Amino acid sequence: MKIVIPVNENSNETTVCASFGRAPYFLIYDTKNQTEEYVKNLAADAQGGAGIKAAQFIVDSGADALLTVRCGQNAADVLNAAGVKIYKTSSDKVDENLKDFAEGKLEAITQFHAGFHGRQ
Amino acid sequence: MKLAILSGKGGTGKTFVAVNLAAVADKAVYIDCDVEEPNGRLFLKPTDTKETVVTTLIPQFDGTKCTACRKCVDFCRFNALVLVKDKPMVFTEICHSCGGCPLVCPEGAITEIEKPVGVVETGQSANVHVVTGCMNLGEASGIPVINAALSQDLKDSELTVIDCPPGTACSAMESADYADYCVIVVEPTAFGLHNFKMVYELVTVLNKPCGVIINKADGEYHEVEKFCDEHNIPILCRIPYSSKLASLGAGAQVASLYDEKTAKLFHDLLTDIKKEVHS
Image (cartoon, rainbow over all chains, first blue to last red; front, side, top):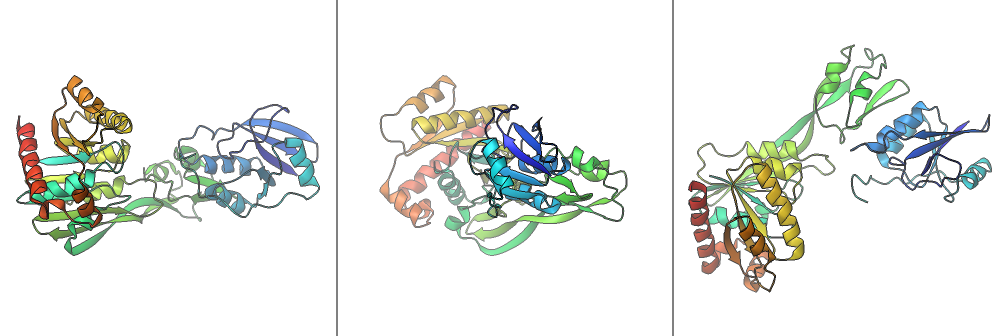
């Protein structure tokens, strides 16, 4: 299965990014082949609808799950429609999250924020 | 004469100035373009009100024609469209009603339908024709409601007072662009000056003549006057802080109708603005 995590850098030194839609990169981890791929998030600089655009990317990547600190309602609508499961990260370390996810320790996110829309 | 009442930040006294200017005129149209929080009507209390729904167009997809080619999704620069499981989804609050997606759809699968985004209320308050734009909660843009409110201006109006949204965003720009003259209400504080400079820049870009009202004009801060002096911006009047005005305001009363001194102040102000506009 494919797992996506929003990250701050495009290397295995990176930490999890607190933002989903405006994260600089996405880490796509394939559990079958145990490969990791870092992809630039083209939605990061979007004027509006960044979460929607980022969610479209996640859907197109064929991901099964998204591990994230938080997620906006619009992005969640896209991911839910596509059947991508959304889980809350347990720390800012990528490896720990992948391990916790594999052990079934991560919880599904059910509360989505209304979106920041330019506010911090 | 169409006057836009502007300020860089909320709470400087735009509505106070706007409703009082309208109230002291023989006849006026007051248009509340602060569509996110229109409050002029709380003071003017118009009667015989009528509401008109404002709509914008959003795309609707014909699933039998759509081939999931994605052209509409790729085209939408506002990211209001996505394609999930070969079905397009639209985020109506993000959509800017640009009308582009039906044009790029090669299958003719997209038509546009109307979506309500707010209402415009019209009514009468003594000598003032009151127009209030009210945007629905959660909408991305107030522009359609602002334009609908401005279109309710009376053709033969001698004085139209436009109560603009605070700040310098598109909504303030759209409201001010309709006017012949801009009245900028400023608070004499460092914060007030900073925001005033931004509004002044906007007014300059729009190429509108303008004048300044310094509200709550007490204290030792003279930087606003200095800036006006350096840029040849006329200071139309200074309104000192008064607990009487604050109390009338808190009671949702138009101060000019209850206080002679205030009535005279706004009467003189209106005369001065007329002179400025015709000079």
